[in-house]
Amino acid sequence: MPERRHLIAAAVIVLLLALLPLSGSRYAVDVATEVLIYVLFALSLNVLIGFTGNVSFGHAAYFAIGGYACAILLTTYGWPLLFALPAAVVLAGLVAAVVGFFCVRLTQIYFAMLTLAFAMLVWGVAFKWKEVTGGDDGFTGIKVPALLAHHMSYFYFTLVVVAAGVAALWVICHSAFGLTLVAVRENSVRTGFIGVDTRRMRWAAFTVAGAFGGLAGALFGMYHRGMYIENAYWTESAQVLIMVLLGGIYSFVGPIIGATVLYLLQIFTNQYTVYWPTVLGLILLVIVLVLPDGLIGLADRMRAYRRGWQRS
Amino acid sequence: MTTMLRIDGLWKAFAGFVATRDVSFELAAGQTHAVIGPNGAGKTTFFNLITGHLRPDRGAVSFEGRDLVGLPPQKIVRLGIARSFQRINIYPRLSVFENVQVALIAHEHQQWNLFRPGRSLHREGTQELLELVGLAGEAQETAGELSYGKQKQLELAIALASQPRLLLLDEPTAGMSPQETAETIASVRDIVKARGLTLLFTEHDMAVVFGIAERISVLHHGEIIASGEPDAVRNDPEVKRVYLGEHGGHG
Image (cartoon, rainbow over all chains, first blue to last red; front, top):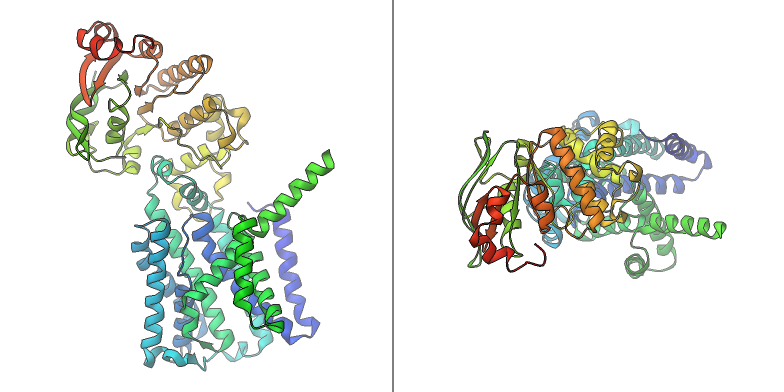
C-alpha cells in the first residue's frame, strides 16, 4: 500500500499541474506537457534498468513504435483515439515482447548492444518504409480528435494519461512481481534457486517497459502532430537513459525528477548556447563521478548528513 | 526406507579435469547424509549437478522417481529440493525480512502478480521462518550487514521458504566460530527433525559430521570411495589413507 504521505504528495503535484493553465502562460503549459511525456518515458525505462537491472540502449524504439502506430491509425486509417491509443500501446508491447525474447538471453553489455541493434532496426524501418511512415520527412499532419486539438485540452489529456500511467507503474513496481524483479536484479542465481524463472521475469519487465514507452511515444506524436525518425534514433535512447540515471535508478520517483530536471535544463541551456550536447556530456560526467545514485541518492545523503550533524 | 534421491553413473568434466567420476549414490527419505572429502574432491560440483546449476555429461539423477537431468534450478526447487551455497548466496542489499519474503512469494507462484503489494505478502510466514533460524530481531537490518554466521542462517531460512523435502547444505558451518558452529548445527538438527526433512550436506568439520550424520559418503578426486554408517566409514582403510590420515589435524 502506498503510504499516505506519498498519496498526498502525488495528489498535490497533480493538483498544482492542473492549476498551471491559470498562470496564463502558454509556454509553461507546453513545457509541462512535454515534461509529463518524458516523465512517463523515463519511468517506463526504469522498470527495466532500476527494477530488473538490465540497461537498455534502445528504449526509443518502443517510444517511436507507439508514436508512429498511434499516428498512422489515427490519420491513415481514421481510427478513433479510443482504439488507436490502446492499439499503439499493445503494438509497442508486442514488439518489445518479440525483441525482449531474444535480448533476455543475454546480460550486461551484450544485452545493451542487442537492444541497440533492434532499435536501429526500428529506426531503419521508419526511415525506409516511406509510404507508411513518411521516411525521413517524418509522419506529419497527425489527425488529433477535435476535442484535444487545443493545446490546453491536450495538456489536461496528457496529465490524466500520464498520471494514470505513473499510478499503474507504481502498482506494478511495488507488486509481488516488482519485488521479484528486484530479487532478480540483486541476485539472479539465488532467485533461480527460490523457484523463479529469471529469464521470463526479465522478459516480462522488458514487455511492460516497452508498452509504457509506447504510451509515452503516442502522447508525444499527437502533441507535436508528427513523428520523426529521430524519435527512434539511438540519441533518443541515450537521452532517456541519462534522465533515468540523473534522477536515480534505485527509487521509483528518481526518473520523474531526472526527466524533469534534464528537460528543463535543456530548454534553459538552449536559450544561451547551442552547445547542449556539451552540457549533456558534463551532466553525464557528474553523474558517473559523483552522483552514482542520481539526484535522489544525493538528497538521501544530504538528509543523512544533516541528521548526523544535528545529533553530534 | 524408500529411496528419495538416486544417482547413477554421474560424470562431469571441466576442460578435461574430471570433477565427478562415475558417482552412484542413494539417499533414503528422512536420512541425514554427509558428503565429505578434501578440498577439490568435487563436493560442490556434486551438489551443483543435483540442483541443476550444472548439467552432467553422463548419468542419471532422479528425485522421488522423477528424472532431474536437464531441468533448470527453478524447476528442481519446485519439486522439493532447496539448497544453500558454500559461499553465501543471499540478497545482501535487501532487508533480512525481504530476503525471506521474496522466497515465500516465489514459492506461492506470486511472482506474476502485478497488483498485490509485495511487501504486504507473507508477513507472518516470513516472521515465523526468521524466528525459526533466530533472526527475528534482525528482520529490518540490511542482510549484507549481518555477521557471517547470521548470513548463513538467513540463507537457511531462504531455503526453507521453498518448503523442501530434501535440503542440501553446502558447508553450513564454513567460516564460523566454534560457538556459531555448535549453534548452527543444533538449529539445523532441530529443524530437520521438526519438519521431517531429508538432509544432504557437505562439511569440513569432522566433529560436526560425526555428530549428526546417519550416513557418510567420502568423495576423493570426484569418486565415492566409501559410503556407509559413520563408524564403518571412520574405520575404512581407504578412507583413512586418502582423507582422515592426511588431515589428521582436522579430523
